Image (cartoon, rainbow, N blue to C red; front, side, top):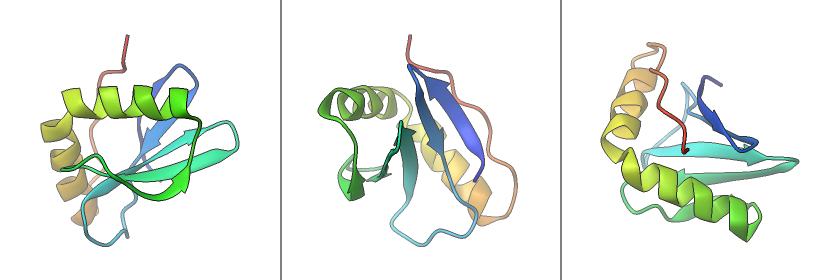
Length: 86
């Protein structure tokens, strides 16, 4: 599970062996969620509304980078780090 970003206690990662649609994973505390990159729709899981809002805000700023990291991970190439939300 390559970590691509961390901010405010939230960890963002992509997995090498995930299937479509393109998505990323966010962890906050003991909660986990997977979010589709293009629509920012929650695919699975649940995190607090505050953390989810931060994740969606961050992802909306970095969609192109997230798609690039998704493609790298599909090729088993380590994804690049993405700037955190400040």
